[in-house]
Amino acid sequence: SQQGEEDPQALSIQEGENATMNCSYKTSINNLQWYRQNSGRGLVHLILIRSNEREKHSGRLRVTLDTSKKSSSLLITASRAADTASYFCATPNFGNEKLTFGTGTRLTIIP
Amino acid sequence: NAGVTQTPKFQVLKTGQSMTLQCAQDMNHEYMSWYRQDPGMGLRLIHYSVGAGITDQGEVPNGYNVSRSTTEDFPLRLLSAAPSQTSVYFCASSHPWGGGEQYFGPGTRLTVT
Image 1 (tube, rainbow over the protein chains, first blue to last red):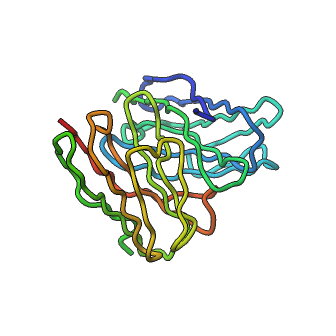
Image 2 (image 1 turned 90 degrees about the vertical axis):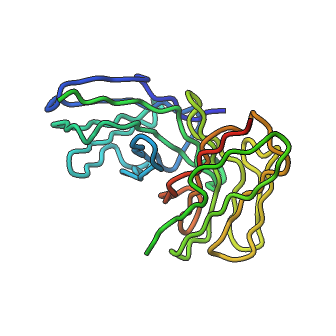
Image 3 (image 1 turned 90 degrees about the horizontal axis):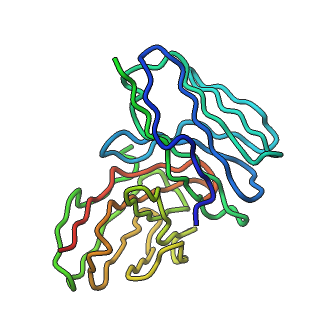
């Protein structure tokens, strides 16, 4: 069963615009992670936010975490064509031994 | 560092055949795992290992077997391939535990006819 669910499933925006995608999860977590997957490639880790953090930045990425709503958002500012990819959220299970991934948001940047 | 490597990149099998997907990492990570990725279903955990000699089942282990004799290698065996095992398989490693940042291999695209 999926722990995380991304929303929307697909998103198309013009280059230069900001892209926001959301992740909801079901159980308590100690961290939440975001990954990017370019077509035909493996996943690449983008950012990890711990449960006691509310916001984290990395370059053009901003991640927020609301543990009361069990949700997170990933904002990509000033999008570029190279940002075209699928984005997944992932959370560890209770024993912190396994990561569970959501079904992903497919982001398309239109030049 | 090569990171996480997987071989082969592509494979076609007939139903009933067996094969081993290879995974190796050179980062001295204790934790390694195998996922399969199917359209619309995200990644699902098949098996994982928290160290040499220790393996455990994930969400979808049936039809697959693993072993971990060294820190570096974590092969995935398909015992008797079925069309339902057509998928893209990813190996990942992390340190020091499975709930942290994962490093993924490039994947193996498997088709079972």
